[in-house]
Length: 148
Image (cartoon, rainbow, N blue to C red; front, side, top):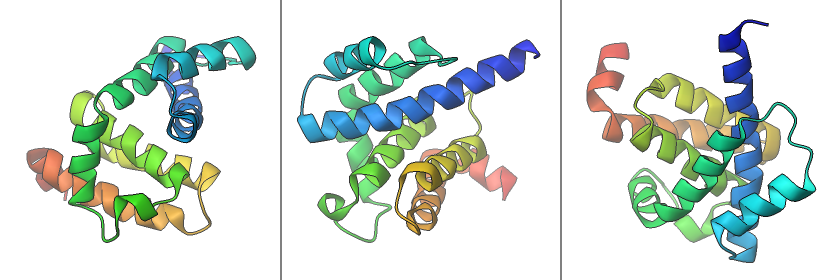
């Protein structure tokens, strides 16, 4: 397998684990680092980019209020009414949209939608897609305007 594919696969797997860890972080209200440590100790994290996984969980937690505020303006419902899985996917995607400029916004949206299809409610991916599309217009206006 080419190196690029292994890197991409490791990041995709890191995102999957990060959504689960962020869900746990929100439910248990423990420190993000404690959740990361539990995941690394108790789960078989095969082919997961562990550095990226840890970065996602810890940085989403550290930037939670900023990320939540950036998402709130894109939502057509109260933050508190969101399903925790969809909330976790949106937070992770908002983090990548804001702080990972090397990842094209279309990739961020696609990964978020796929994560929501995997872990979220039946129609949740549609909601996540629309929210992330609006977020891209707000956070990356030049990039999303060029691609439109």
